Image 1 (cartoon, rainbow, N blue to C red):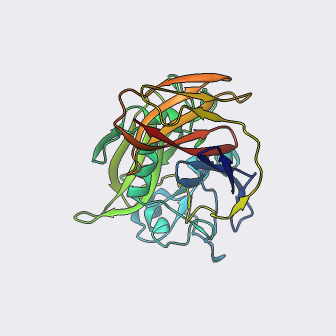
Image 2 (image 1 turned 135 degrees about the vertical axis):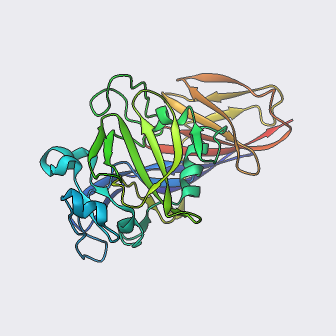
Length: 315
């Protein structure tokens, strides 16, 4: 990702121009990426059959052997790679995740805390608990339409995460369940008192993100997160695509999006909490900020392949 700095009057713009970044695993599978908030994620479920050191992950199609595993293993949904590898990826047990070698070099299986950061970015009211973490963010994370989700999917995929209903392999009899109905994602975080691990669940019929626990021999999808986003900064003379005024502002601020459409806007306070989200239209947008407390805010504008941050003072 390239970051571009623009000095605009007294306003400093930090512009992140997303390049067509891709990541390749040891099998040669190529994944697109997406920048969501301060994180960079794969846009696709992991499908590798090799660890990032080149060693093979054991393929375990047999139900009895899968149930008894206390070591790494993977499978395809219904043991049918031709149908389910593309685009749903593989299903891994947690012993595979726990090796720390599953994701491509420079990437990792996100912790429970990192998953919560993602969900809270999309839904500031999200709760970190053994519960429904958010009743809104699921629609931002799931692919839109019914191609890879069942009837009832109302998702917008506004984040670009593009979660698919890949189903899972259950822990109690190793059968396959939930294709096009649910997506199960591992985290890297164990629940210390019990032999269970934190996970995330998305469903086709609602916008919920569930933060639950599951057993280590469950077969689930994996999304990898970049260890640390690229930080290279180039100073160039960038044209004024966006204008924000007045600054300072009291009750309203105006954002001129020029010829850009479907722009997502988030406002963050000085401790990094998202306090407001809007979708902006082409042209001048009038944003009501009367409810915000006085202080300094960061405004983030995100399009299909770019992001801009700027400072705003609320008086």
